[in-house]
Image (cartoon, rainbow, N blue to C red; front, side):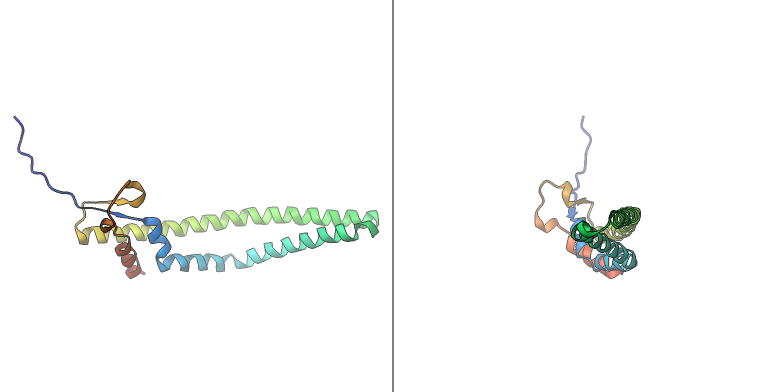
Length: 154
């Protein structure tokens, strides 16, 4: 004998977390802050790239008229600059990537909090990431409401 089961319709929504992250003002602010934070080191690496290029061009252009000693000194200088570039650029890339990940996690936490607020306010039982839904009607998309909620949080 089957028991009496009360069926309740579930209220489901979806949110495009990546789109929300891209449209909230905090993301642009964070990217600008990271650029500012690393601007001096990025400029230093840019100058080093120019110096390497200049010396390689000088070696190519003036090499035929240089003494062997001058050519060797310039070749050694280029090699030293390349080593300095490698020693500086790779760690900087890693530092920038680590800071971006750290800030991305903060953004995702803000978005998760906003999803919770919107879902609670709108009485949703389930909220899916848009990528998890094979199909969903546009009226079930709460991405704009979530972005607005994140905007309120500051």
